[in-house]
Length: 296
Image (cartoon, rainbow, N blue to C red; front, side, top):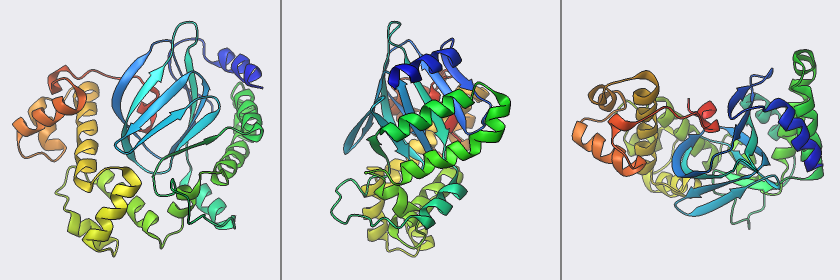
């Protein structure tokens, strides 16, 4: 099956880069160049690797995903990523933005109990096995992407089927818990969204906790379990990734960028930026990695 999938992927991916498709929720990516570990942000998406391998690094976890294991990021999450690719064996993947409305509907209909003994349940990103069913959906989706008409008529239903299969996957505990509105996972997910939307404002942990009706200690504990970062570390990484976009893509000056992302000290901003990315702000360049799709 994977050879058939690769054959179809190669028909759609003639050159390196991020490619739009006839479905707004789906993009295809190809690179023949190895990329060392570097910081990025993923936001509410599914990564189906067609060839090659990626390795995601969090402070408390390492996630490998390839054609046998897909990656699901059900919330906004900064982490580091390494791409294994070469001219002989390019890295190719399909990136699918997860429709929250559809996922809410599906999760509400699923009556699968969530294991209390699962050690991976609390982490806000997970990989799962590519089953024959997932392979079949992947191939049908790739075939559909060849035609604008097919994409318009069939694409939405194929994506819904894909989301359902992801939601009932072996490791999809957090995904299901995130879409149950009253538990801690959904509260932290809403807080992450709030940080992502309001990164330029003053953000304090007691207010974020109070907004979700949580104590500061409980908020901190669950936040770190889900993201592998403390709230302050998370806020800093969101701001720095935004800053890189402002400088590299929109040509902001360093001073203006620092203030735009919520820093009061330009020198502290420059120090944090260099520590995080490995180069000073003025050297930031546009990136065309596949995750650009999900940096909102």
